Image 1 (cartoon, rainbow, N blue to C red):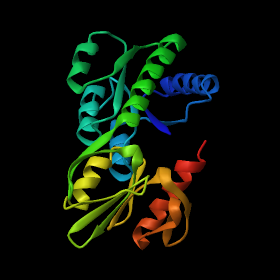
Image 2: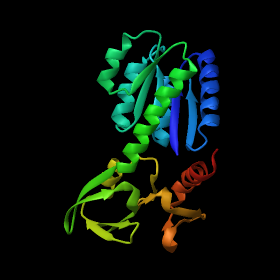
Image 3: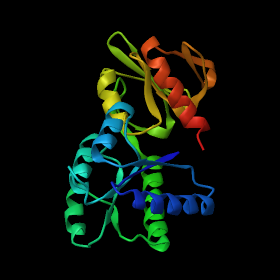
Length: 241
């Protein structure tokens, strides 16, 4: 699932973007996409702080209180791997966009052909980066490059972190769980249902009140304070349209 976020303070732009997004979804049914809409930078940043970031941001350049360029800088400090596109009435902002590593820009009024082209380009980049994303980690057996798509679970035991891969390979590292999660949190499939675990939701099979059911009959405890968040995450991850 690729999560896409729009932020524009003008209601009319939301109507246009929702129409373009709806048409894009109907024409690209093979892509798993979900669109989110925000009308102010402050509301978007608050959401990111509480719920995590998105894969792709489409930001209006001119907004009251904080420009899209400034907003992108704030997003970059939290979600370094995200793709960013700017909505602008002038190409002059394209130069500033390079400072926050933008993937492109769309000129208003946005036409369907430009919208589809830029969005597809970013989605392909994002899919490629997710497919090849990896973590280089110092383990008991030396440095290892771990493909994130193969990382099922990280467990913390005393002073050791144990990583389980999809082929049942088990690796040990002394890197702290918080350090590991800081590297993994920008990928939406990773979460912490309990302070001693990081899990990859791609390997989750079910949810109970006090545990997450993983492939291979693994059962991961869910702390009481995290259950509400995990329930929402599980339902959003697997059942949202």
